Image (cartoon, rainbow, N blue to C red; front, side, top):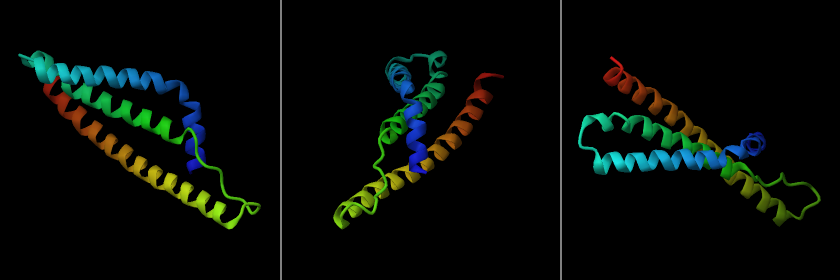
Length: 123
């Protein structure tokens, strides 16, 4: 699984800078809304900005974390080197499971927030 994540992250490498840009724009808009919004007109953009920031941060962290993954240990390595490789790859497995959990949480959060936002502002 982590090797597949590495291939996906390497193919998505071009989206790293756009993820930073979108995340920054969303974060700045959240700050402006929190500090300077005097009416509900601007507050209605808080939910899409929050969702955009969450997805931009998730995409960026996925790309940066999985662009390099340690190789599998092979028989030619000494015992300590193989153990070190396995521990390192185990850490990446743990991060992959955490990332999958946060992605599911982000999907649920997106669905709920967008349904509330659409109900409040589209009618």
